[in-house]
Image (cartoon, rainbow, N blue to C red; front, side, top):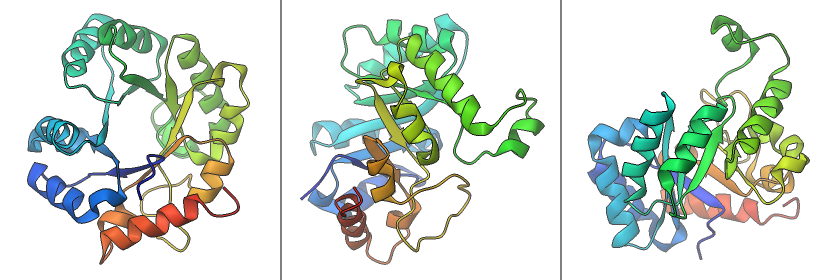
Length: 233
């Protein structure tokens, strides 16, 4: 039985590999993320096929960032694919443009706060202003939500703080950086288990490598779902 709180990241080379993984997972998974790395490998075609022919929900993770008019036009074009979630960077002008572009579509615009693979040293190297990472995530979340974002992308370590914001009432929190108990961290630096993320107010978790690289991806997905429904959650 699927649970759409789990979103599986199809970070594979092309649409054929993505469809193969989705077929392996079958009815265990109902929600998929297709990211920028798949764009030139048939990602939009895969999104359309999974949505229209297999009844899956689709999260298109493009992290759009540009001048307002360009973002608006890009989102208007993507909205025709009947997607469920779309990411943009959390800068207020980008969020406002994305909302204009989606029009009457029910696609949720999710704002990226600070990427979960980054820490303070990475922010320093990018000339991002001084301050604790959590404080900056909260500040960006507030500004994005005030600009009209339907939710935010954030590390599970900031989820509880974001959920406590008045601006977050009725909004979505979606977290990558989720690692099942005992899984390798990979390049993620701000992580949590599935149960802890849900307990802290997260609506959807994104899991990629721990499922995709497992000897039996379907069993791995079932294990994540079991953790989602653990007592802590």
